Image (cartoon, rainbow, N blue to C red; front, side, top):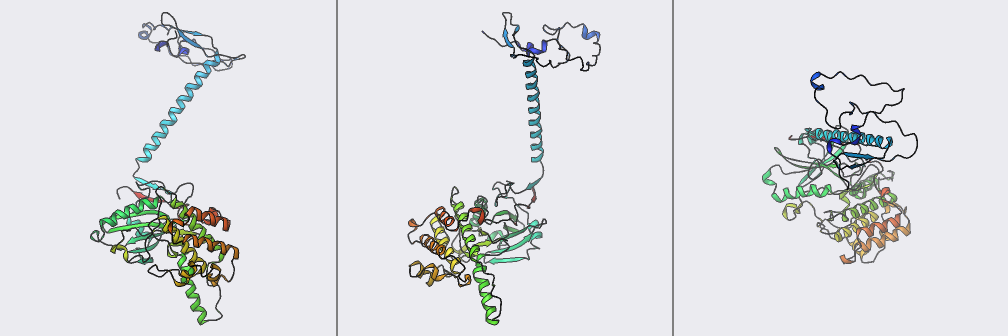
Length: 459
């Protein structure tokens, strides 16, 4: 029966005499002479020939070597059987490797401990460059920013680029040159900010941080302070405005110019056919992603005013309303009814696609479908018959007919017969031959490649 050797006799090579290396190797320095006191102490058993240093054995010159087998004799002493110099060398290598691993692990642990103990938290984008993902710096995954930082970026909050009855949107520029959009509630006192609004504000931060898609206006941070009362969200900035502006506002301005000057340029800045298809496909891919999350993320409002355009006219869905409580508190903010489920989002997408193709409003401010759009949905008109004249026939007829079928299926009166956004995205990819990468921004002009927000703990 094999028994483990006594601990004082293990490892087995410690009681071996030193093995001299080749003659060319330098000889070790002589050891100092022992003191009389130490020489008077008799050595323990097994230490009479223990060397003061361990010399590596010479490499084996031939034949296979076996690892020494250690057994215990009757008196408990360890006995070795077989083995050669190769086994001993292997043991030395293993010991050295284990020591190096322990040293490396200790160094890594010390680095992490020093980094976490720092009072300054640096928040940088993910190395992948995917929109909407910052390194986790807060429970929600979104960094808390200081009002002073945002106030400086937005020029003392004087650079207003949009407003609603309950919100104001500012444009800001960070010290690195990156442009941001800051959405702030117009409430100036905690008394005017209900508990429901506070709950929805926090819930909105969590929900928006879950969306990781390049066709989504990503949440970069938030600001929550009491003196002065502040509730803000910081988003990436889309420099080309909203889809609404390109479909309606610029068209109206161009019509006015032509009325006063018949020789005015006909290039009114309208979106051309390929750009409209790219925007439509990008929105579909983003909605598909949001519906595949667990639980699904439902965008509250989907229309031309909530779709922004980047430098290269890629679509960015926005969802900036963060006090989503319904009733009187939000009744004045959005005239269209809020979307409650995926089926309603599919319907909204179908109507948005119709608006993009026709260049006309599909619904009134109260959400009622316009007469021309209602006639189309009833089958009285084809999509070809209502296409935007600004396109001047610069579209493919067969493609328009296939989009006609997609719009009608999305706007089916029976929600159960409407396709999922995954089906819609698949059909659009078949029609346009446009993969997801082709519908996303070619160069992310905003935050992910440059943005670095530094927040001080306890500030």
